[in-house]
Image 1 (spheres, rainbow, N blue to C red):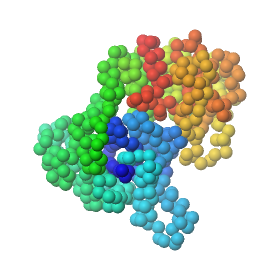
Image 2 (cartoon, helix red, strand yellow):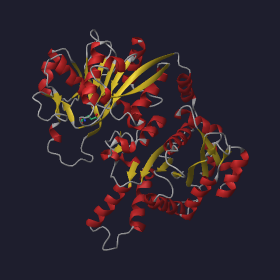
Image 3 (tube, rainbow, N blue to C red):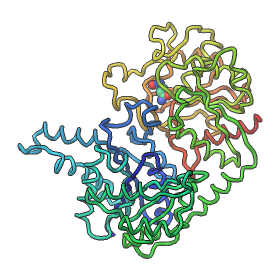
Amino acid sequence: MNTKYIFITGGVVSSLGKGILAASLAKLLKARGLRVTIQKFDPYINVDPGTLNPYEHGECYVTNDGAETDLDLGHYERFLNVATSQANNVTTGRIYKTVIDNERAGVYLGKTVQIIPHITDEIKRRMTLLGKSGNYDIVLTEIGGTVGDMESTPFIEAVRQLQWEMPDGDCLLLHLTLVPFLNAAQELKTKPTQHSVRMLQQEGLNPDIIICRTEVSLPESMKRKIALFCNVKQDSVFESRDAKSIYEVPMMLHEQGLDAIVLKKLKIKGMQEPQLDDWKEFLKNLFNPKTECDIALVGKYVELQDAYKSILESFVHAGAANHCKVRVHSIHSEHLTKDNIKEMLKGMNGILVAPGFGGRGIEGKILAVQYARENKIPFFGICLGMQIAVIEYARNVLKLEDANSTEIRPQTTNPVIDLMEEQKSLTIKGGTMRLGAYDCKIKEGTLAYKIYGSKLISERHRHRYEFNEKYAAAMEKGGLVLSGRNPDTGLVEIIELPVKQHPFFIGVQFHPELKSTVLSPQPIFVSFVKAAMKAK
Ligand code: GLN
């Protein structure tokens, strides 16, 4: 079988959930026994989202091979339980960079370099790269942005050309649109959908399948109207209703027969019904919790849910694994003071201090760690959160009063967190952090060892600063346990307090949230939720 390509575009407005739709369809196709991957093409000029502030596009998701990517790749991994890579996320910036580098290298032999064919050829090359690896039966490609945006035009043109070049049945176009319900008229409206499909048609593309985001169920007559006016078959209009959980979406689409139609249109025969037993088991646990707990997420990007997307999803997975409803309370670290900390963290069964960059909100985070440590509330620090735990311990237990990270206060006399050696000579910001998966060796008999049940683990990283080795002996003497280190460089990756002293206190330099999936919840999150339930 040739590799088949499914393209997903979005119309009318952004934030309709193209990423969730792509992940859900991919999940269904994988559950039918196909080898599936998903990639995202983003129209912005940044070479990757690594240099974007979390307020712009939410969290930056990091792959095993160290690519800084769009957060939708997190959804792909959480749904598919398969790792993605650099090739799965491409931006306009990356396309242009390649083409301009080629031009400087003389690759185009004196030709005038243009959007068509040079940019579109490079887009097409990247769109078919994973498909050509021979590892996949189906490659789903999500096109970022909304149809009609000036900046997504070259992507749409590339899809048009690919569709023209490929044999019938090898390429499918899904269009996700909005069918709003107007309260005053008490009516669903199809006009925005018609307009967005027309926009696609103007660019030479006709969708094969239309998926309508809607708050209420679409009557058959309305689906027929959309089919007729938008030039798709009557069985090819689907609805995507607001769901209680994103993880319900695959089931909702399967019940309407989306995966069956997709297979039919791609001329793939003889596939089994999707095997979704473990997925259904997860949903059952998610919707029928036996207990609940409250976790404080202390960070500085709390105004935007997407900034901590993977952490929030990890709690969903870990909650279901524990039959527990985890209520995550976002707490702005800038609002925490000595006087209000007790009030602000009242009733919390666990405290997580989030990753982050720069000095804003640091003192509040330090107070949160101190509060968790002294009151024996389960504590989990991630990346900056781990670094903060080290600073707090140095200041309040070792009495190194000005202990700090040189990221926050370069002139501190006690730099317990300092810039990594290889970072010191770097001046370029993009793609230069310590990125991607690294091994970590865990000391036996520690909390980390109990959690992972293994001496060697691998987790993903994204940071420039590290635990300063010069303070290792003093910290250990002072009672802090350095329970995980990189086997090659010796960098400290995990710190904790002895279990005799504190029921659950752990900080990790890596980002465990990036590896949590529905079917493989991340072990630290699972244990942290368990500890929070016990604390309750
Ligand atoms: N700012 C810190 C560093 O660069 C932590 C990064 C993070 O939390 N991802 O080391």
